[in-house]
Image (cartoon, rainbow, N blue to C red; front, side, top):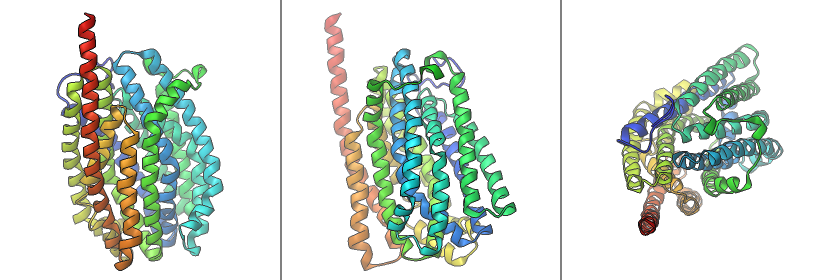
Length: 460
């Protein structure tokens, strides 16, 4: 049983209500974070102009490309911590906590320097228009100052999610997001700081959320409490974290690389198209918030039940998660589809920007539940300890199909709607491959379980 009000018993009882109770706070926290991030874009788009909006938007794919590798690694910490928690192996769980936080600090500092050095080169390679590239460089250089605290927050939140605590990270994001929104308005509208003001506000708010999660870990139950004096890297634990998390990070980075290529194609349409894509991409974030929250629930529940030897619940976790992906993604996607022009007009009232944004949303919103499936299947496999094969399939399916689309199909019809038809096409192809992979891995896990049960029976 859970020993405090924040933990969820993932090993007993009905699964779907508990997956919902896990996923909804995580979903809401991400949506609230996106709402506050939307304030960044709304403020800069309305008070600094569409060129500033385009400048911030031009950095999105590159930033995700850099940081998602290590955010993926944090999933490895989540899986390891969940498994040790379910086994009551609290010594190992404590080692996961301290190794994870130390890894986050080192990775964050490394990203700070790498990001600042490569910023202009990356933007130039993406054909960022000369009129906005200096603003984009300024935004990214300031943004990367916050990567150490960003990384620590994500690894710390991953530890809390491992025991089912998604409520406190949600509260932290509400607080930091409100601060971010207030500072955006202050820096941009009062002090006329433009993209610099938005970037500085983001770094300050990230530092606040990091501080709150660290304070929480310092006060957690002893099994997963953070002790600063114990901060060090246990290389065996780190190897396990990276074995699960690094493929997830590489997968996310590779998918974002395909988005970088898409961004380059969008850039060829000019600043209005870039602004429309920026607004539409922010809308995608709200749908993905639902998909990702359920995926993380699927991964954590799978890991805990595997750790506790409750193999019969693994398939039920995935089935309930896929049902939830369908319901939540289709519901939010329908809102984005039917009210798209009104939503995009919040970011920019310019009719050309709205038209470009709708071209992006037309074929992608109602089909977004397919992206949820594409994420949930690998999430279940990572929870079972298999991460490399799903990574390869996702890269081949998503990135490969999008590259083929951009270079061999898109040139025959150069418009934004046709460009982003590559999304549902790649989702369908990848889902089919991931489903086959899941069946094979699930059978392998069940075979190991039966063998272990037979050995225990013989021992008795």
